[in-house]
Every structure is written in structure tokens, then in C-alpha cells.
Amino acid sequence: MTMWVFGYGSLLWNPGFEVAESVIGTLPGYARSFCMRSIHHRGSEDDPGLVLALDEQEDQGCEGVALRVAPGREAQTLAYLRERELISSAYLEKNLDVDLSDGRRVEAVVYVIDESHGQYCGDLPLEEQAQIIAKAVGGMGPNTEYLFNTAAHLRQVGLHDPALEWLEARVRALAS
Image 1 (cartoon, rainbow, N blue to C red):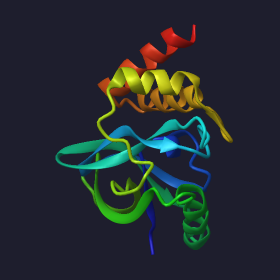
Image 2: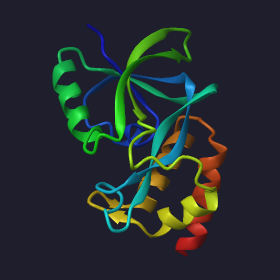
Image 3: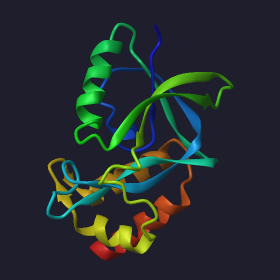
Image 4: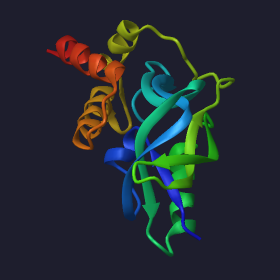
């Protein structure tokens, strides 16, 4: 069975699994935002960072990249993703339809925020997000690196995210 994974944040630049095909896609009904406090990878329990998550928003659509898992690697990939993405149970694993830029619609594994989880922090003002991202560091490195890599890879595949671009510019200014 063909397995797809929808990447909208770090999966864009660090999927961690063998990708057979990569196609721009839109996930309807969700918006990408820094709405999850990171207490492991990009921050700590004492000084949480922020990472991207998908917030359910009926009138929105998140542009990202659908990644087709190499045939025969599906079970291994799913186990890897669960270990990586479900580290604190702030994400929910869902199988959702993604509309690909070439006209196909595929079902993909998608990690969305659990709004009832303590790490959820939707509706933080962009300036507050920038202040947090500029200083947080976690087990996977500085929060700035996560933001900068994600912004660079969105540009690289031709995707435009105004809020993320504003954050990138503001955090660069704060860090300099």
C-alpha cells in the first residue's frame, strides 16, 4: 500500500525516511502556525521554544509537501515518525486527504496539534513568537535554526507563508 506523509515544518528539510516522490500539496481545513510549545527538541521544560503545528481552521488550507514513502519502508517509516512526532503526545496522528499540485488527491499521514494539550498555545501574537524563538534552545538545537530551515525550504519549493516570513525577518533582527 502506498504511504504518503504531509510535511509542513521540519519534515520539509529533515524527513528522516526514504522519500520516493515529493509533490507540493494543500491540506484543506488546517493552518500552519507556531502554536506548540517545544519542551524537547527546540526548547526545554524550563524555557520552552515553539514549533510549527497544524491548527484546525475550516476556511484555511496549509501548503506543504506530500512525501511518498519508499515502497517496502512504510511500517519502518510509521514507527520512526511516531517516535519522533508523538514524543509528548501534543500531536495527533491523522490520515487526511491532501490535494497535490498535479491534480491527484492522496491520503497522507499528518501530525496536527491537540488543542486540549498543555503545549498548545494558539493565538500567540507574532512578536511574542519571535521573542521566544530568538532565544530558545532544545535537544535538537536552537529554535532559530528550526525557523530558518523551514522558511528556507518553503522558499526553495516555491511556497509563500507571510507569517513565517515575517517571523524569520524579525527573529534575524532580534538575533543580530
